[in-house]
Length: 356
Image: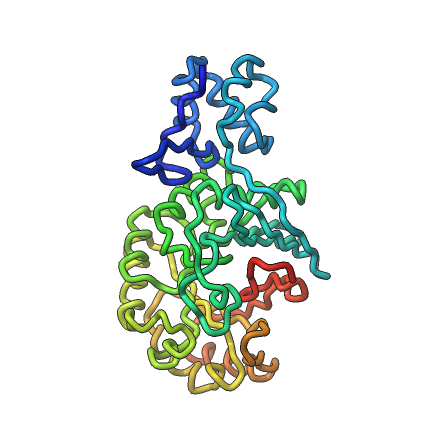
């Protein structure tokens, strides 16, 4: 007797022409319970399976010792959905970069960022990225495909296992544009929150901004943080840095962000990478503050992290502080984030699938 294929909204999409067994990772207790019952097993095995997948990190159903041996043999080929480690490097600040090999051989990057009180995972949502931001290594490598819910959740479990520590925060800021993979990202948010057990307010989704997708995310009423990668105070400069932003004017993007605030009651964080002599002048800061006036928001300034393909420079601390001062004078909430993992090419904007 062979196992019945797992049918769910999570995991890899099914094809009309082929029967595909979906990975179990990303499934809820209810979904796993329904599946084990389809196999002729008692309902309580659903909770056992959930515990072994999310708490014990099992990689094969054959290794779940509480299941009868005969049934383990029947379901041994049903994939849980775990990746394999392709490459691992550690930066001097203890940030760890992982290149993970997926079931089809594609490589994706994730980053574990430890601190005294928390362990943050920066997860990818696509293999590559189609947004082509001029200052980003990932965008220089092109785009291959979306990640499934299972492939996103797997990154969190991988870091948790490696550090032997509970993950406290997850940021969707790795490779790819999350809101071009909305369905799987929403499923992953639910699973990371409900199955892995990380609070919604400890989850952050970052986006360059895709028309109507912020509104779509808002309708789920998640208590997550939305981070919008703005990087410029006007449309002309934004198009220079983010060519894919041309069809979506900054005014329309900010209107949709205001809707997000109204629907969710959550403020929006605006990410702004500071590039010396490009977007870091006091007049840029003043224009930005005027754009965000009356907005429930926070500006997160990120000094540029260098990549080989372009010759942008990071502004010095005086220039950064001058930018901060203008925003503060205009009563715009602001902070500066110096990225971790710089020496291991694991910092913001440096993620790529090759070993470096």
